[in-house]
Image (cartoon, rainbow, N blue to C red; front, side):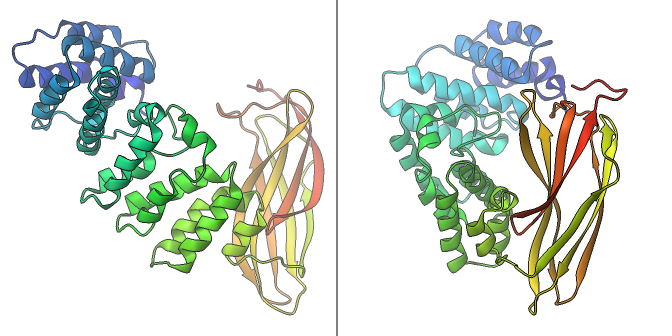
Length: 372
């Protein structure tokens, strides 16, 4: 992944200052110059905040005056890339501090125009948090916008769990708040937009699976050529969790004829930094073909001695009567930054159409690499 310097370093800050200077030649812009020197050593979020504050200081006044300057800047193709993040944050901040009620609507309009230069999905969150019904009413009008970037913003900016985005209380508590937007976009011609819709619905599945299954069912009842793929993506978390409603929508009915032998572990102890091998066999003993989602689950030991499960995909397949699937896998316990390993008893089991089978325990030892 690019470093913060590569995304929003002093060179980008200087280019942003040049763009603003061209749009507002009478302003000295000392804070943007100073902020460029302050960026090294800070996180991307902090760099964004520094440049946003500098923009607001160098472009004082009302939202209307900021809007005028930035719309001039939009004529400059250099206004693009990661410099857009602090620009959009400045738009939202100035609008929310302006006494003129029209600033709120004006900010949303300007964010829609800026989003194609990178994205306005992060800045829109503060406007949503300030007045969710008013903001959603405007965002809903974007679903038939001719620009796919604006249509995507309608879905992406209103996600419940937007990566890097701030929390919006109303979106966190009401799973139906954005469904009208998703209904208008799930058959969008752009895969870019549809991918956002799928991720948005998947966000909702973490706490409101019944709502998500209901929505996905409606979409599958009125599909286009891309709907099934979108729904599979949207239901991915529920499928891994073995949710029967999600599995049923995708055609994975209970398969009583599916018999699991194993898993058989390659060792009873594995060290952090090494890999555990395992084998298993899934047989269809029934008289009809069995459509199966086959996963495995690792039950990791937590610091307090309890265990937490994480599901890993093996395959999706259809077994004919008498046919079997032979599984031969290895699971790595290589140290990575996103997982903390705690030595002690762990477990591994197979999961077929959401039904766990054959739990086998093993010991995770510290090994020669430090657990992180």
